[in-house]
Image 1 (cartoon, helix red, strand yellow):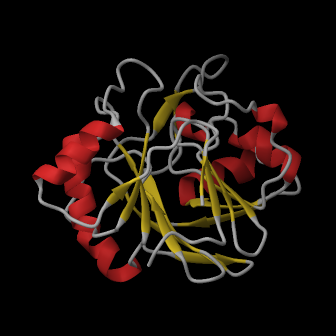
Image 2 (cartoon, one colour):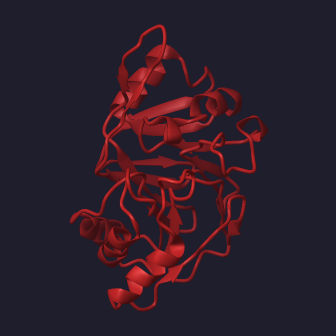
Length: 245
């Protein structure tokens, strides 16, 4: 299947995406709008119907609580993140937080969200006054099936892992968002293996270029895909603030 003409995907740098669904819903994923490459500040975000955060690191959780408090979305998340949000009230009174876990699927207004594994870590420093590491559950990825049946996969922070074949078998994502920066996640060479495991025809690289240490590039990903002999794969290089679809 070609890219979905009824859906708009906008990348705001790092792993932050805004998705406008065929049914008119606004989905935000890993909304760290404060990242150095984002052309849009978090205070400019005035709508979110569905909020997804892959794990608790600051560069993914980012501005999520503040945006949720202002926009009152539905926020499906891993169990431990649900516990923290529910007990602290960080998501705001109007936000509907739904705890679930890897292997589970939640349906929100005709959009199906399935949580899948990621291989990474998830704790972050709280700062004063607690001065401790806050654990918000295992890292995860999400496969989202939109109202018209189009499916995309946001891998979060991860390395390639064999069960990506199971993600392909069970969920059949048509578009995949993969980290390529290296150091904290897979780089381009490993991401090319992930492309092979997932079998998706369209790839959007993410989690690169935010800081010098995230040195992988879309050009390197294309080269690595070519070395694997994979045909029919399009790497969509989107500038921060640019749209796909």
